Image 1 (tube, rainbow over the protein chains, first blue to last red):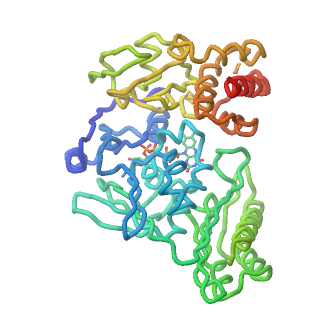
Image 2 (cartoon, protein in one colour):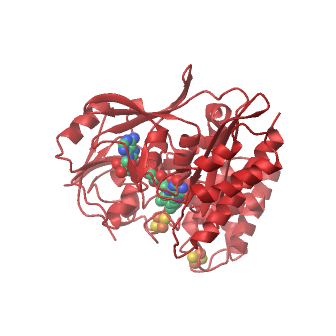
Length: 287
Length: 157
Ligand SMILES: Cc1cc2nc3c(=O)[nH]c(=O)nc-3n(C[C@H](O)[C@H](O)[C@H](O)COP(=O)(O)OP(=O)(O)OC[C@H]3O[C@@H](n4cnc5c(N)ncnc54)[C@H](O)[C@@H]3O)c2cc1C
Ligand code: FES
Ligand code: FES
């Protein structure tokens, strides 16, 4: 099917984008890579009067390193996350996850910011930014504000962004000393949306696990923090018994629903299996 | 309302009026009559619509034509005319790596982008690169063969 008619404006800078939105009576959508909007327009799931193209705004582009961490502009395409040396060094978890996001050509245009704002529960990046405790920099009609990734994903395809607000960049804090990370997912085919996936971040402290972040995707309405599994790790040595306890605790954290392709019990089982693999991988790197 | 669009297509400057709702694939096919770019699913899944946008493969069905303002687009016609994929085309032909041919332009785009990276890809890498390209006829084996053979020859050259 073809999209219904709409108007299109290319925004030169952030003030212009915000202004175009302000004058749209709420009937406008920001356009980044378009890889979710365009199919959704074609399927006529959406019919805004105006698309405001933010993909060429310089303030939304680029990857840079500063004292606060790695700053990744919202319009950074997935392919750059895969290839950028700064990302590889300072946020390897993102680069690892990017391999699993869609297919090569999609990654050339779909943007990091568009992916996070879309907040598809099967998306890899929302789980990763939550596990890395990233901060999201937002510009809006009321000015700039910062939202912790922890507080950003509210519900299915729903974020803390207010109408008209633009995600400007994502700030990944510098890794804690000794921090170990791992990402993996189970999918039927490379690049397909995962049956289950997870991002893990552990910080050792005096020989035991000091901090644990475990965030699953594709098993709930948002990226899901596995609080009970984290609690099973904190203060413990990373040994087989601790890993088994964390995997068992996943059942308290996740309540996936049945769906036509995968029964809930299978998905939950796979989540435990996946967490076991990730923790054993981290165990191998544990000093 | 139609908007002015200027871009380069297969090396030639093109200026035309397009509706914002027209995708790049629509404009290439319907306005410029470059029908080598195919449309299958129109949602980014099958890869029949791949074109090069400033040298990188992108989906013509997911890119609005107006977003290509000022960009250089290369379609399969352009790749063919330049001769840069003649060896790849010959391998596809020799191995029957196409039957109906609907997927072939997209396969060639993906293959050429992969091969231009330089290193000789192994079969697993070729398959991974093709994960966004559907073929409903060949069963992929011959396509992977053709790309692997081209890679080996270019690597030896
Ligand atoms: C075939 C296919 C397979 C895919 N597979 C995967 C996959 O395996 N895993 C995965 O995670 N994703 C997958 N995706 C989705 C893709 O990775 C992107 O997440 C998606 O296309 C959104 O990014 P975009 O830049 O294209 O956003 P757009 O489509 O341009 O925008 C998406 C939404 O975000 C809003 N938006 C965009 N940028 C901003 C911003 N900076 N500030 C405020 N609002 C903004 C838009 O208004 C819109 O509502 C797939 C997509 C396709 C087409
Ligand atoms: S038509 Fe574009 S991917 Fe199928
Ligand atoms: S040859 Fe027919 S779809 Fe590939």
